[in-house]
Image (cartoon, rainbow, N blue to C red; front, top):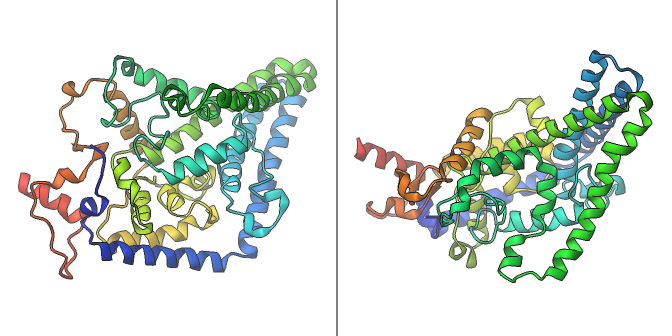
Length: 402
């Protein structure tokens, strides 16, 4: 099932893992020391661009009812919402720009343009997800409590609806992300009281009301006779933003090669093993500069999970060094075209709607979830100075099978 012994899975010795941690710590130190005016200029320009696109989109919808103006308004508004959520809100709330000591761009002050309050996002995402990344039973982002994405979750009849839940989550993504903080699994297990849930729902309801009121009451009313077009345009812009954010997030967490881990793997985890878990549990997708910007640089999900509080505009250069570390330690660097990464994520969701007995692969050798038991038939590697890593092990298994 999920990985319990991460060193055995990666075919690394304890010393290898310590050395890997030292190299990644050095990358962090280098970036922290080199942050400066270039980075500050980047984020300020990103904010100016986002606000300009939002203003243009609103004006285009207010000023004209022509088809071209509406399409331009929708495109501009959807782009502004994507940039605000992905490159600004997500990354600012992570504290990536706190080093600037600018109250406007500080994680304690930024409230983003989405249904989830930033205070709740900091808990459910910054703390829970990034601390327990892909640990089954601890990271609630593994399936979001509504989908089966690993065979570590025992199949139940309601999971037959996996593809439907997936479609609904993509369509209503900003609302789903907000409701995710309620943590219904914890309520069922009595790890969270209904009183705590009601408090969360009150805070969430206030933010949801403001979002709905802004997009579906205030701005349509300001448009006067164009209120119908503005209402529809806002709904379409939100839908575009929802689908794009959903696709980016899924491509970083559910393609083949984004591994899952057991609670036992986490309990006595060293810093090096935490790094290793982030590297093995995340996936990138190929992107040029524009797509990278529009994805909040989360096309570098591996780098983001390693260094969630470093500036996103530096992930490309960090990625070159992280890939070199993967090569050195013979670890996979999971990446690929966007559509392929999404298809693998979708196929996992689709096939795991079915009971395990209907599936061909074993629970330790399924594309979406491996474990160290995958290599149980191998002779354990000797750590005598000659590295025998994960990719070598995988290649050896393939050669033996052939």
